Picture 1 (tube, rainbow, N blue to C red):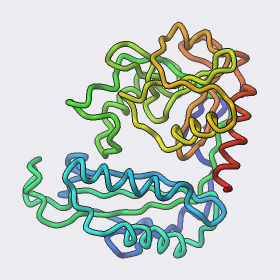
Picture 2: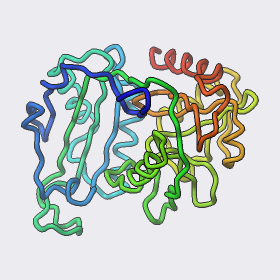
Picture 3: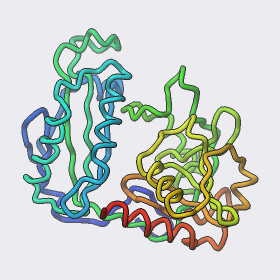
Picture 4: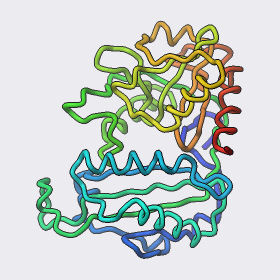
Length: 300
């Protein structure tokens, strides 16, 4: 990656990642040999749920929140994970210890409906499973400059289509949004909700700062991210006015600051949206303060 392109999930190169062990259904397997069936529901249909988690100083940040969301999402799609909460955490720890990780690591824990008998969508055709995989990497964010966003026509939709609150494997809508943004010369897509209000990006939650106030969407049409919730929490606890509300692109273009939130990058500054420079185009003072408060919360 060059300074001409940034990405919210770009990490520093780490040679140790070439020799990782991947947890696949109870077995630790070298990265090059880790596989699932071509008949797996996740590969074939995007039928599964996942969580991304960060390791800081030997601890998984906000682990209980991630486990709550994983099991709630599995229940929502009627997927039996096949392990209780303690067993899932034990698998996570087994993978961490096997890879000798202590900090600055990222885990992606995925559960699908398992291997299908026939290549069709009905859940009853999944006869072997579920499939559970944990990919864990040494991972430090590497973002050379503030992110550039482009508004795209792809929306985060209504819950009766595919509820955007669900952390599912079915990410094509977001991928198409990301492609559209890249074609427009941006790093990531800014997505609106069904009413035309600013909502989220294809991969992260979105915030703006106006006259010392922090604004984010209502949360009705976006993934209610754990980092998003923690940012709202630290703002409220430290006297920073924060509002979950509807706001438009006009409000956004005139913002003093904008930033993204996510488990991987925590708080990532946004420098430009649709060719408009936001504030100074650099990390702003409110975002910087929130970063410090968030780091303190993680450490606590």
